[in-house]
Image (cartoon, rainbow, N blue to C red; front, side, top):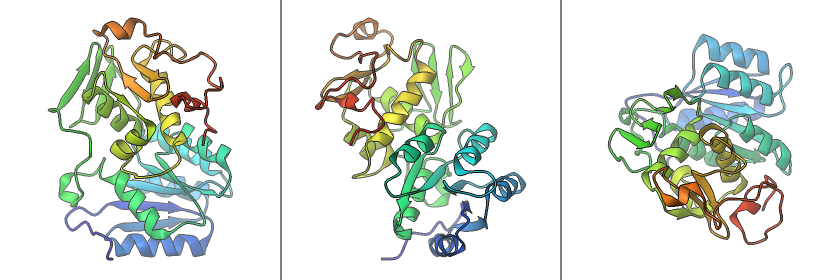
Length: 278
């Protein structure tokens, strides 16, 4: 099956990997999908390439000479918080995968990987940032007008901008889309699998991805992330957005998670609160 191409707006992808064989294969698959791809072989040259010609997305290896992938991701995020980053990690390094998500990677693919899968993951993040002219399917988040609001929290989907109390939030692409989805569905509880399918566009995957993004989003929208009142946990189910005007937002005994994120609860969504949950 041919990979879809983007006929009008060509997305530019920067591949930063010190393994020439891997990067050559990745670039070939990206170009076959109609994307423009460039390569960099280490952290410093990757940062220089991103500064010289800003990409629309980055494929970033975790283990890089000069500057490691985590630090490269941090620096890219400082310059462009909404830049999609897909990180490549070695199989079994769960802690490194979670660290990558914590510093702002939108997605990760474990090595060895299918180049076709990587292209599909990139398409998933690009469709949330590229214009419709790029030939990409629209984001799965329902278009509830140009903006969404909950009290002092305002989200403008067209401008890809969110503010809290008049202060602009620094959100990654996935964090923005997760927030938009939850704001568009106030009061509804979603399992992590549902969020992965609706926001990430994946039918399967490591659910710790959702967990990490929920934790990061809470740090940005909650007055006290340890006792959230907006993005709450529904034990045994998943997560729910409680509007500030909702009675549940003030206190919800069945929703507010334990302050101890490692507290064992085999069937609760906030085994979600541990980054190592299966």
